[in-house]
Length: 318
Image 1 (tube, rainbow, N blue to C red):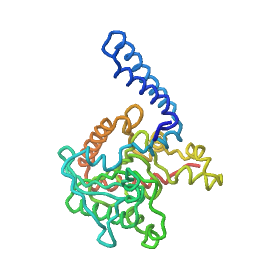
Image 2: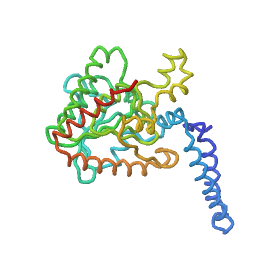
Image 3: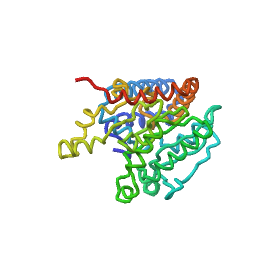
Image 4: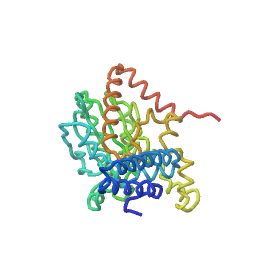
């Protein structure tokens, strides 16, 4: 199996390699060669479609964590222009796991905030694998308050296994920092939007996710706990994560039915990592349309609707 290849991707990748060989071969310009390439392309499209139609929740967890999946920094580079990164929480330090700043998407100036996991080993360590510390959440809140001051909409990009659980983070008030964000985001006097681009893990995701609308990429996940963590608690064995993934209802389709999220952003065939440009265009369109719609809503009604949205998530029937 190739590096970074998921088990269910192997037949797809093998067919892609065969197709590339045909396209680069001497017969590619002949009539019979072109016909063979067309047959392989059709076969590949059918294989991708059928494979992704029968994905299990555990398969979707793996796609959401795929090392080649676009990260927040990739979206920053491809969604807009004139990005100005802002640093620090004005209290302790800057947190590289949480990025944010001003950006222009379309004709709209925004404040964007999100978690960055990092790419290579050194970058992952520097970014703490996207697990923000208290100063990351305090920085996020500082930027949101700055956006509110200038009456700019806020878009947050969620991609984290969870908030950093280290001793230092707990000593500096991890739970208090997240709780403060939950309270303050509920009353921000500007339109707010969250987009889950990979993993939406526990309070680490919720700390920047209390917004007017929550959109999820098709193959992203959003859950109170990781499947491995759930399995360790319920079954005393993380190897039962596949069972937990199904029970947690963490996929975009499940969460839309439960009304936890407001919409699903379609990914390209084979997931966002197979055609990043496709997902950049879809996310850009979603941001422009949602912010345009939210801006038309009166501020008083917007705040009441936001409060009602999250109050209703606690309603259940016996």
